[in-house]
Length: 232
Image (cartoon, rainbow, N blue to C red; front, side, top):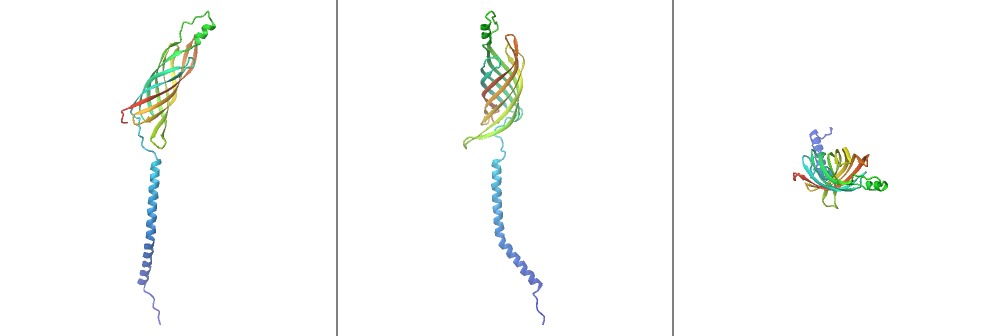
C-alpha cells in the first residue's frame, strides 16, 4: 500500500504562512526600534547644533570704526604722563583693518633739575616739560575670537588683535620715525558698540642733555568704539 505525501503546493503555503506570521510578530518591535533611533538622532543633532559654530551677530568686514581713548604713557627716558586721543579704523575683513590715530601727552622729566643741582655752573636752557603729539598708523590683525556667557544670561563676544606700524612722535627731543607694535582686545555689545584695551610699545631715538638714547615707551589705553553702518 503506497503512503500519501502532502502536495508541494500545500507545503509551500505552510512555509509562507509561518514566515508571514513571524514578520507580523517582529514588525512592532522593529517599528519601535526605528522610533527610538529617530528620537536619539534628533537629540544628537540638536546637541550638535547647540555646540556648533553659530553665525556671528557682530560683523566688522567693510565697516568703519571710530574710537576715543585715554590712558597712561610710561616713558623710558621721560616721566610717565597721561595720554588721550582717538583713532579711525577701516576693516577690510573680519581679520584685517587699517588704523590711523592721533594722541596727545606731555613730555617732562626732572633730569634737567638734577643736572643743574649737580653742576651749578651749568644752566640747561632746554626745558623738558612741553606737550607732545603722536601720529601713527597700524595694520591690525585679529587672530582670536571668543564669547562669554554672563551668569547664564546674555552672551558677550570679544577678540584679540596684534598691531604693527609706525609714525611720528612730535617732540623736539625725538629723532626720525617711531616704530610701534602691540596687542589689544575688544569686547562687543550689540551691533555697533565696543570697549577696547590696547598696549603698544613705541621704539624711538630721543636726545636729552646732548645725549642720544634708544628708548621703549609703553602706552596703555582704554576706550570705546562705535561702528557704522550701525546695522552691521
